Image (cartoon, rainbow, N blue to C red):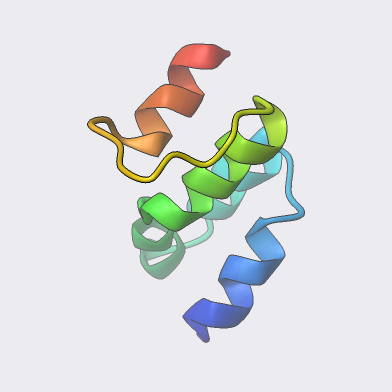
Length: 66
């Protein structure tokens, strides 16, 4: 799979679809742990500004928000 393409596709998926994508196979499961996927989801769905540095994991912030 092409990671860059799937990163772009993931930007348009809602939270339920992101979780489902992670269940497709081992590659997608690992892909869904990339911080870039969840950072974009947080910035989009939580309407937060992108900080320069963070002391947390974007995936955990997103999960805690819902």
